[in-house]
Amino acid sequence: MDSMQAYQMLEWGRPPEYREVPVPEPKAGQLLVKMAGAGLCHTDLTIIHSPAGFWPDPPFTLGHENAGWVAKMGPDVSGFQEGDGVLISAMYFCNYCDKCARGLHEQCRNIGLPGYGVGYDGGLAEYILVEAKHAVQLGTLNPVEAAPLADAAATSYHAVKLMMPQLVPGSSAVVIGVGGLGAYAVQYLKQLTAARIIAVDTVDDRLSNAKRLGADEAFISDGDTAEKIQDLTQGGADAVFDFVGNTPTLTTGLSSLSQGARLVVAGIGGGEVPMGWERISMNAGFINTRGFNLPDLNEIVALAREGRIEMAATHFAFDAIETGLDALESASVAGRAVVTFS
Ligand code: NAD
Ligand code: ZN
Image (cartoon, rainbow, N blue to C red; front, side, top):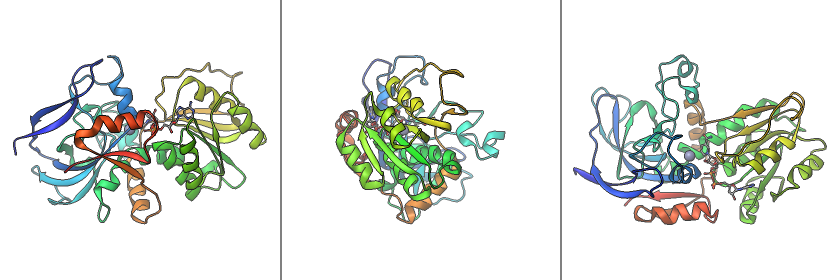
């Protein structure tokens, strides 16, 4: 096969389109992967609606939450065979700078913002070309089910892991926005920490799902949320994870911190809050978190293999990507929206 369909960003301010493009040829160190599942992420919506200037410029194929089967290997690739099920890291990293050497692939000095589906061609296509160093063997895991591990499950794991030493018995953690990333965060908090878990969202179904996954308290997010959290925790939470990142949620987050707590922001909601010594809780901190590293990815693959995380999803056919994006945007999708390929 020489050509394939790809769902591409072509220009800022213009909706993505299906296009016929050549099937890429893997070069040294690369794999050609036949796509099995591609999770749709709120970041895709942000990219689609973005003006020029922040993200790497199009054209590129969307889709950064990818898993599939190795179809072809470039020269000098070892550790893979045709047919292997692989997860493709949404984070693109060089693997040789000092940050990567320390396992901090999310801070790679040589890459920055670009990644698969964001500058480099992503997985909303029949095939994706990847660097073998960005692929993780899935073993017995089904790539269709595993796709959300490539970003939603990994980014939320990284955020929770940053705070694990503080989430001891008696502590509390708030998750703002329990959609894709947030629903995973609730599961990690439940399984890996002793914190009391408080979930907030604007959608009832999301809250009942968070309760089912282990949240101790769950309520609708509004102007009184910080006050409710202060009451429930008798003086503020030890960690607040914001998976929305707009001005109201950042404001709620900062106002919900106890002394020494951290607001961990992964949501790309364009919000702004005034900051300064007098404005936030004493000894508190703000962590701007992006992505995850290879150790994180291996750890969540292990959790998934052991059946310890739920990877709920609603499937959308490749020609129904827009229906999936609409369901994601209206927060009506059950679990992650995952595009499947025939
Ligand atoms: P999602 O749409 O699946 O979930 C977002 C949830 O937030 C939904 O349940 C929605 O109802 C809820 N919500 C919306 N407004 C709210 C408010 N004011 N208060 C409380 N809850 C509210 O999105 P997702 O795919 O899980 O992504 C979450 C965020 O994380 C997005 O901003 C996305 O761009 C970002 N993201 C960041 C990284 C990173 O590396 N930092 C990686 C992936 C995604
Ligand atoms: Zn994403």
